[in-house]
Image (cartoon, rainbow, N blue to C red; front, side, top):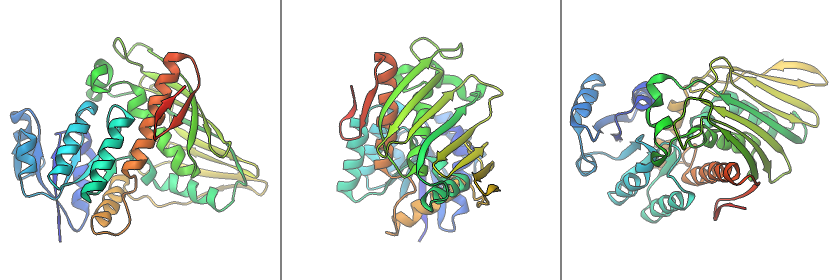
Length: 338
């Protein structure tokens, strides 16, 4: 049985990654695309060999589809996801799931009540590098985890700047764009949940009024691990990385906070240094493979709706900390809390 997808949003990420990932599944096909701009929808469908182009959500949900991929601007996710769930369509939604953790919880509850699979498209937990790090920690190779560092400050390409740096009302800014990913990746790799965050944000010249284009966060996890993360849109030459330091060793990963299956992971212990091998499967293909399996009743998406609540709550707490100048508790049932 094939899974017929409808794309909500004629987006760059869908064109660059998701369309190929869906078609890479033996049971995946793309049946329709929706853009509120009819001309864009038609052009996008033609360029990407998609049979149906529509300009309203009702038209898309009325088409012969089984699932939707939502990659519109952040403020539209809630309404579009709830409409898709009501129409009986499975939902894979870009992060953040919504603008508030309360709205994300509404989405998750609606999907659960309807028996619908809801996934959050956190691609980084699908990277072989991060899975190798998670396995090494779980196997005790670095002893007791003590601290972590994430370097995820990049340069936002001009073609992606747009609403991310100009529209606070659309959920722009680096925290809702990148900090959500770092919070999720830390949770995944450490197998641990953040409970508190202190954050600073900055406007270094790219973002417009009311938005941040850089952030530094200090996280405390349930186990006592402390972590720091640096997110940015403005650093052209920084490179990315992820380190986890334990009582008996360190994991040092380079060039791994990316959409491509690249980078390296070094394990450093008293025995010396060892480069860990890991699979180089496309991150989005792995995500789609697990999502299709979840539709068949086999397991769950690589990042669930609950994972999306966690990452959004953590990012919202970071924003709250930056504006208040205080550490903020992280509770996905309540949202951030001073």
